[in-house]
Image (cartoon, rainbow, N blue to C red; front, side, top):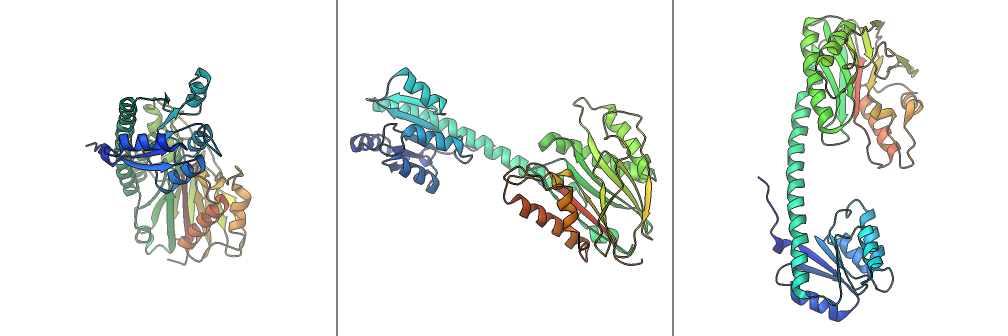
Length: 384
């Protein structure tokens, strides 16, 4: 159910340096809406930041910065980009009105104006905003639920899955939006065998999340039927390619991990893994041996095997790590990934994951996250 805000709870900011204009508007609107007043452009911007309004009634010719500049700044700021703005101005030339609309105004009324017309236009703009806000709130609720469902698909108790194997596993996932296309999986089939995977669906948002859910389901089904990562990936690729009208795809690295530390891996278009020895010599292992999953049926993938020694850690990640960007659009990159573990991995898988995630966040420095981030660490802690 969509709940629309009562217009009496809407706040209107009146911006005008002429007292008689302000008094007229206050008298016309005070019984119907909450009001704020600013007498110049700078005060208007401060008022918007302090108490966000639902509508701005904005004069153009004012001391200091004019109404055009106020409008431009409000449209430039993501927080106020969609805030309704109506110019109330004595400037009546077509060029003046055109400039106002080009800067992003929702309406323009010339002075002297009729109070009834102002009230009608104000009410119309506020109704549109209230309805738009209600729709966005409903979408936010739906997306929040979708995120909970998606996160619930992923394994939650990784220590229990690895118990008794001599292995330590930890993972984290941070979608760039409410939901995303990254996934990780840890499946325990016996005392001797685990299947571990990390994958990245093309794109972000709801389409990627749906394709991610399909991929997880396929992986769990096939890993129970087939032994061997290359064989699992080949079957997954064929199944995903059968009905894929949007041409979506997923990169995936799949590991078959044995109790004694033997790891067999196949890689379908994903980033290489990072092997970190206790002495701090990270190197890339298990590069891609075939194309991404979901586009071309009949693909062949190759298995590779290595032995994990005590204290060795494998770091699996999606490209949201290496392609994380700072405010200058510089990427985190492979070199910084290696530098993060130049002195070795953490004493636990959790510390390893947290260290890399903290390094990425510190590098980004608050810049918007552009892609989903997933990190999984698999450490051989002791003999089983």
